Image 1: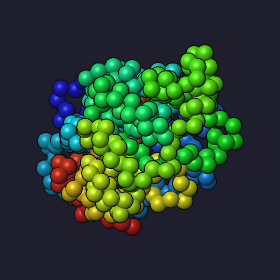
Image 2 (image 1 turned 30 degrees about the horizontal axis):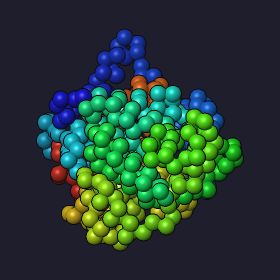
Image 3 (image 1 turned 90 degrees about the horizontal axis):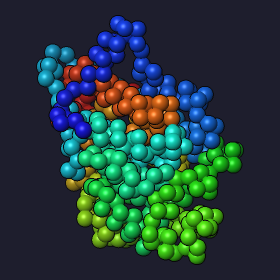
Image 4 (image 1 turned 120 degrees about the vertical axis):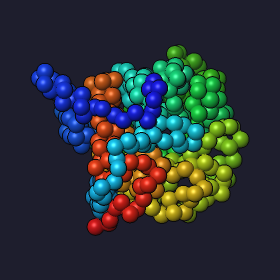
Length: 390
């Protein structure tokens, strides 16, 4: 783990020096290009699951278009000789305001899945958020992340005993903050997966947190090993909970002693309700366009949410981050940190741990250079006056 989290990323210099020996990066340094490479190299099922969005993919496209509607206004003759972009969010320090979003079923991308991601995250000092839909157990990911900083994301099951057990296991494995995803009460209509007739969970992939859970296992008629089909059937019966309301947040508050963040907030009114319910933060997100086709771009929702609760709870952002300029824009519009999903998943699929490392170092270097070239040496001086809407 990095001992000096404020140290600036030197990846650009390393790449140019390596170029003198004829060495070039194995993956592109424009993270937008990863998707096309992944399309050719990953299995059709894996690529469809990672890339796909809800319906016609309108929300996926809107997330990127929302960034293009905001333009950076660089400022000159500001001293950026000794910048620092380190920050702390809800007690979690990070060398730059960039985190790894919870992405399920990482074993589809690469056999090392969440374990590789956890190790690289610890190495680089980047906080990770583990998905309930992981292909590794909570305990194994916690051990792989070792002294790293990690949060746990809950897909809230119908069985409260199983939900409580998930939280107990995460707390015991060193996860400090709980992220409750609200926008996946059920899976959306996802044509890429439907056209291939492929849902990984029905094949026992991405359900390892469930299958390893003692409370879940006690509720089965037969052991998982004796009747895996019965275990998967039980999973399908309790995954998601469309009956949840704001009143149910008392359950997580009673069963989690650390900070709690609600993911999937796009409405200022919902953000205020989160604060009223005693939540510590929100993640402005539309699930990367995977749940509601035709929804608002996540970045378009960010300013109103930040205005509504920015001084009362932490506001974070995901959905559509691809470049350092995207990170700057989200921070300027009110986010304390951003989370990335598809880029590091593609990196994992294309080159394992090395791919994740490349994506994280690329994004951080791009962000820090963009900040300096735009005239910003610190995060606390970055506001909406750094942008114009076009």
